[in-house]
Image 1: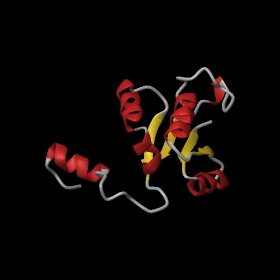
Image 2: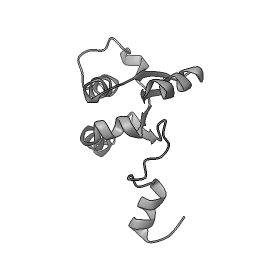
Image 3: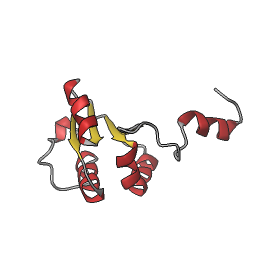
Image 4: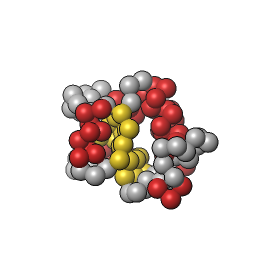
Length: 111
């Protein structure tokens, strides 16, 4: 498996129609449980087998916000799966920096 998506049920359904497996989440506990299973931090592997671990984990911004500390900690490890955040049902959260804004802030150049 190359991809796995975690987010609102409508987003997950859309990705599943494109052939991407996923799990809808509704609160922090659901989100954290699935995140730990997908990243191999949980002993419960009922959702996926070892050889099905995704290389890319897609999180909606809302799901990522619920487990922000855990996501940041995982990204600092630089281990697969790579985490990609996408806007949720209501579009991009205006309180979040975009990748372009982060690059501009870091190097001072607009892309």
